[in-house]
Every structure is written in structure tokens, then in C-alpha cells.
Length: 168
Image 1 (spheres, helix red, strand yellow):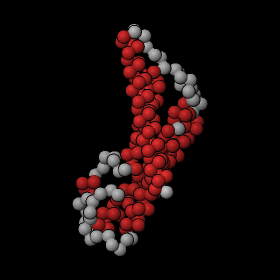
Image 2 (image 1 turned 60 degrees about the vertical axis):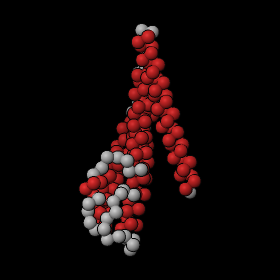
Image 3 (image 1 turned 180 degrees about the vertical axis):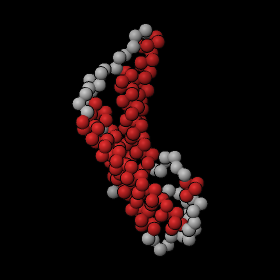
Image 4 (image 1 turned 135 degrees about the vertical axis):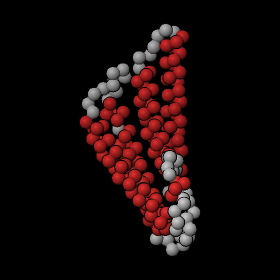
């Protein structure tokens, strides 16, 4: 199972890297044609915008998996005893999970109801909007894993009396 997760993570990072390279090339080509050739690529702005949106959402899910989002850990790490600290983190994870569920459900509703095409590329906007419920669902799964980890830590008898900090 660990090997499968490692392969999935490498594939995810590769996807983000390839998308960033494509974004760089598209924006570079657009700048070159606009300022050097006095002609613009009509589709480049739209494609770069869509790729940027997808990279942002996929990157947010990746950052969430590794607790890299901005947080108030310096406050939570000062809470003693460790069980109370874990309870506070559990409450935070449950709250985040509720928000993620709302984002996923309503993101699906919006994406599923989209019937228009993008103006330059003629892509169905449904596929552009689908990144919201897709990454929302991924983050919900990650959130559930975090909640179960917190619950197991909470009921573990060897949890130290003083907090040790960290998100994981």
C-alpha cells in the first residue's frame, strides 16, 4: 500500500510539474508573439488562466496533504496537556472537513450545471469547473485520514502529558 501511495504521489507531482512547464511555455509564447511579432495568440490567455486555476487547486490539495497551509500552529503548540492540544487539532480538522464537504457538494452542483463553452478554446466549462469538486473530494479523503489519526492519537495511552507540537 505504501508503494502504491508513493507512486501516486510521484504521479501527482509530475502532473503539477508538467502543467507548470506548459503554463510557462504558453505564457512565454504569448509574450513573445505579442511584443516581438505584434500579434497575439488569442487562445493563450485563456489556456494559461485555466492551467493556473488547475495548478492552484491541485497544489492546494497537495499542500493540505502535508500540512503546508498557513495555520496558527504557534498558538496550538502552546496548549498543554497534549490531549487537549490533540482535541483542538481534531476540532480544527472536523471544521475544515465541514467546509470541504460544502465546497465539494456545491462545486459539483456548479460544475455539473455549466453548459457554456470557453470563448477562445471552445472547451466545455464543465471540465474547467470540475477541478473544484475533484480536489474537494480528494481533500475530504485526506481530512478523514487526518481525523482518524487524531482520534487514534487521542485514545492512545502513551500520549505524553505535555504537547510535542506538529500537525501530524
